[in-house]
Image (cartoon, rainbow, N blue to C red; front, top):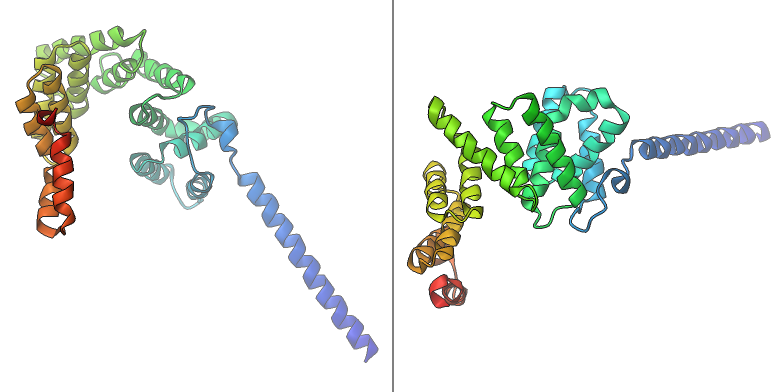
Length: 277
């Protein structure tokens, strides 16, 4: 009986030790797979990210069954969904530790950089520099490609010292497209609208924003931009009209499904329109 008890105790002890060993191995593996956001991110208040989201995404990207095409697609969706900083951290990690694999996702790296610059009011100076340097390489490798020209020029518009270069690249691209009868991409139209706005050529800017609204009539952001440009030239009636179109879906929804709170919303909305100033 004593031998049996000792044997049972020994088995239990071995099971506990095996469990502890497995736990330590899992912890070690998790630590090895952990990506340091502070190390591979940017030291800037505007560069925010979730360590949990970063780890979840990196685990998804590493699933063996996924092909590079699958991972590229997932990354693209995550960038569009607002997780561009997390994708960027992961790709910075790859670029430093697994360069060959990182090369498979070069386009996503450019997109993540550009998404941050476009979405953040004051992007990290180092990130903006990295984005411009990357876009310049693309442009220099294929200077006749409409997409690469627009991508590079767009980023230059966010700088103070290179803004003129960005505008000139876009105006030259416009002339080139007109000469060759090449179709304008929506991103080109958007960039030209912004370039003309920065150049204080407001009528031209409005024309391009109107083109965008015709292509994407459900995108309220285009109507907001048109309203803003009209406000710059002092046409408050037109500015107010397009600002109303910006918020039309919300107005319609609240009028149909709203409660008594709609009256409060409506009065606040009207007080915020250009005519109320």
